[in-house]
Image (cartoon, rainbow, N blue to C red; front, side):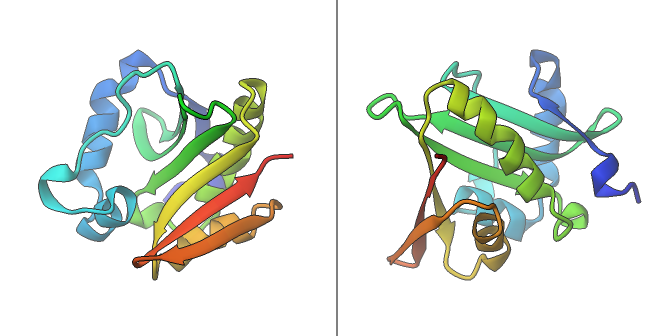
Length: 153
């Protein structure tokens, strides 16, 4: 297997649409559930080409193995929701942390001052990404979900 630090992290391109859709279809049931907070037919490509989103992909050649995105809130443009999906075989190697690190300056250039996320209770790997990000997460548990806010200052 290719080492995670050898993967190319780059912005999403329109030419990636088919491979990103294929990537989301390859997520395990658990991976899809933790990413979309639902299962089954909701497993889909989250990015729709919205200009308010910054999307990065992690690729091994033409194969996309992870997607990180942040979508700026139209109501609160200083805040962006952040989300990640990583194929099972690439998890637990710091890839989510790398994607978060790359998204941060891009979001700051757009005026984003904080990231927000909803994380299923029990998704400790994702919570670890936030805890070890170098940022100070504010976390509130509500109805089985962690509401996480990360100040980017």
